[in-house]
Image (cartoon, rainbow, N blue to C red; front, top):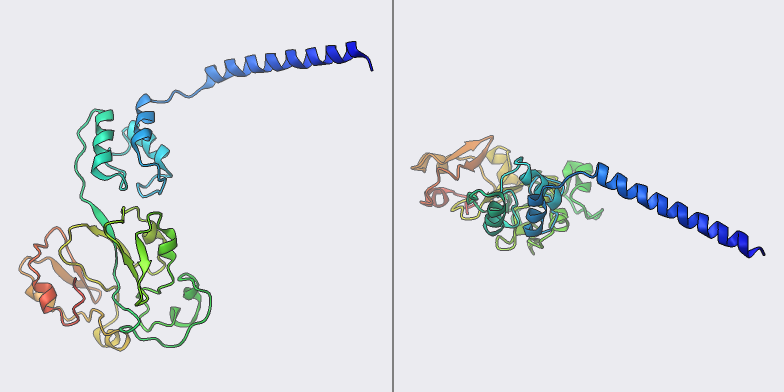
Length: 264
């Protein structure tokens, strides 16, 4: 074995490595994208959950958007007011205190209240039920299917399936990220104000007589809540009552008048 040849080869490889490193260093400095210092500071104070509840791909994307002025300082639903205040300090603006919201499942059709058309023994998936007869065994085609895709989607363990077979949100744990809303194939989960006085726990758009055949607690569109609301805050649209939370004063008359007691 020629020692000289080995040494020369090692020297050549070493020199080539040094030259490549030198040119890479120059290229890195020449073509590097400048990062706003505020972006890094914002990223440091964000929760780091990367849940996407803010509407961006993750915390780093949100930090970049805030630094560019493309997103408000209170855009993070997980961090809430405390994080918004810190981000506001970094951006040199006052963070407006946004209304805290939580997810709410608009269905009260537990196993003892909602009727079933047949026994289902297939895949335990809410989405899979869309491909079986009548969209699942429940007589109400609008209600919670109870297989928990929303539970799996929640990064904060804030939603669970109750003994009655429907999803229920823990408002104390919910961060309003919206993951459960995206996961629900029934589209019966929505964000409501944390301090909402009254909410309609039903999503059925069927006529009253059909609702009563399917569920003992479904909204029958009787309009009693609408007729008795002194604030004009509740209206029946497409056979289901809706409450305008901005108008609602929390008087409770709608809940008192509701014959099905599904206004909480």
